[in-house]
Amino acid sequence: MAALALSACGSSTKPEASGSPSPSATATPTPTVDARPTPASSKGPARNIPKPVLPEAAKKNTEAGFKAFTQYWFDTVTYALETGDSQPLKKISKPDCKICNGYIDRAAKISAGAGWEIAPQWTLRGFVANMKLDPLGQAAAHFLLEESASTRFDKDGKVLKSYKASSSEDPRVIYAVFDGSGWRTAQAGNA
Image (cartoon, rainbow, N blue to C red; front, top):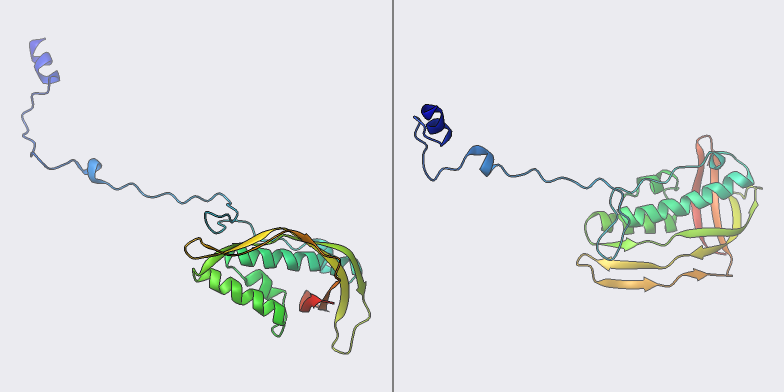
């Protein structure tokens, strides 16, 4: 019993080197990446937010489809401005769409680390489409737009510009084409 007590008290026949920590003590913990969706805020840009999903209705060449597509287009602009990922917006915009390219350029700056945005959420009201195509093959729609508050930040988190929420009675317009794969924005802006 005495021998058992001695070995339990830590007497050992193997000498340990002093001053060298055990391997488990020196291992650096692997940092974990927070995969939770985090919207943009004054503390930093959006992370892991889901891409907007094209509604089934937006895949149809109808007035209801055009309206659903237009809301989706605005949702992809918000997504691009909050994440820097402009791929969904590029996919549904014609290459010569000026307003689309302006948003795509802003998203590229965000992606490059030049700052971030709490982008506006836009909601359509009073959508009326003319499904008779113009000479360029475009349908046109007029609507009113509600816009949530938004803020643009520089890379250090300084506020560059803030916008108040608004509900304008000034009509807006969107021109879009429908090809075999769906709608694509040709231009949008004030009517």
